[in-house]
Amino acid sequence: MDDLPPPPDVAGTTLDGTDTYVISAAQNATLCRSTGVEPNADGSAHPIYYYIATQVAMGKSVAGICATCDFDIADGPMMGSSGVVFSGRLNVETPYTVRGEITGLVRKRSRKLGVMDVLDYRLRLIDPAGVQVLETANIWVLPRKELA
Image (tube, rainbow, N blue to C red; front, side, top):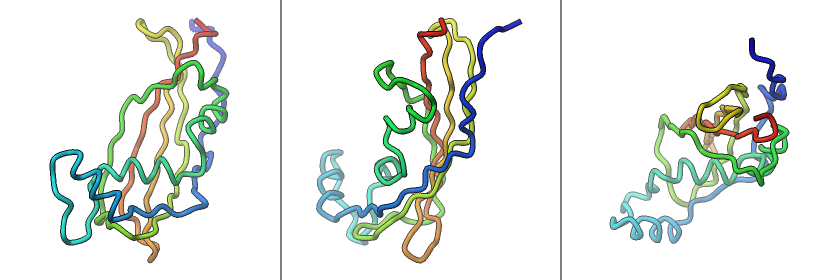
C-alpha cells in the first residue's frame, strides 16, 4: 500500500490569460529564418508559435503554475510532452487570447525520479472573432525530492 500524501487539488484552476499575444511579422521572419525557411508570404506564422503564444499569454507564469501545485520551481520542473491540434491558421499581426485550465495533478513513484507529480494542463488560442485556432495539451513532471 502506498503511503504518499495526495497532491494538491488543482484540477480546474484557470489559466486564462488577461493580455493578448501578437506574433509580429518581424519576429516570425526571424524565427523562420533561424530554422532555415523563409516566412510564408500569406501572413501565416510558423507553427511553433502554438507553444510560444500559449505559454507567454496564459494567466500564470511557469513559477506561478509551480506555486499553484505547491512545487518549488528551484526543484526543476520538466516538460513531459506537448501536443497540439490546429483548428485554424496562426497568423502574424493578430491579437490572440489564451483560455485554459489545469486538468489534473497525479502523484506517483518513478524508478528514475522517485516521487513525482504529473501535471496536465490544456490551453486554447482564441482569435479576435472568438474562434479557437488551436488547443495544446501539456504534461509537466514535478519531481518531489522532499517525498523520496
